[in-house]
Length: 395
Image (cartoon, rainbow, N blue to C red; front, side, top):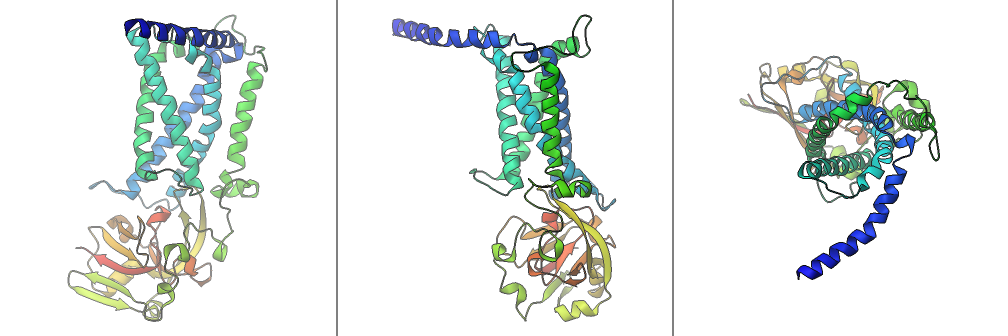
């Protein structure tokens, strides 16, 4: 058995060693120098950190931490943070590919493991590379709502983000001496160098152009100034019912009949009892009009003019005290992670939070939540419950 193992190991080494040596000769290309890797790594690290911070903020808004107040101002806060999240994630794609291109020859050094410390270093790099590739891939698939993977996106994306940041911290700690050594140009080190296929400056320019193009051609779904250039993002500003994009139609939610049923009522329940409001009842209450953005986790956003009953006025109609605990909202939609949501008291007390009945000057389109939906400032779009049927005041 020992002889077989030795022969097998020798045969594997015989096959792999030439490949490793070939990769080693490729590593001598000046474009694949540590300096290039560090330059690209700075930008990639910044993109990952922005993406992580804004993603963490989005997660907290969707799953509030007890006792931690949530901001409702500025009203476009979530639009900015989630737009930055998707933009930084998009930028990370060409930067990640560029960084892998600069280091891949060193992944095949021979012998592959020289010590325990070297093994741990390579293992941490394997985790960082693998998690990074999976994270950006499922993030891009989420933008187009193509869930071909057999696991829940949000929970997996959030968990992998922590693994990625942890692996990145370990990698930076291990490579800190190299980073410090090449952080600034050393005497005699040229800013440019000719490589086998492209110069260092040309390579970095191409990477920058790819990152800039990725932003220019997609960020228009959330940045109005770039809207005319938006040709690759799945949604466009101004395109959709009543000039506003949508994520989930009434047909997809299974409410095409119940949403337009003549006997629809909105039930507002309190500890003291409940009261049903017909659509005419809601229209008879004082109406408010506000310009608020709808901003979704997929990165698209757009401001719109909403008109309806202020939530604080509706609660006053049922003699409910000022909310100090989350309100529960139920949709006519029976299935889905957000068919039932909770609204923290900060939003419920905000005078800009509406039970919207109209959008951009017309009756709310059924795909936008007819007969009534929630719209609140600085809140994720998935939490702006459509096709309302019940509001419950818990205390």
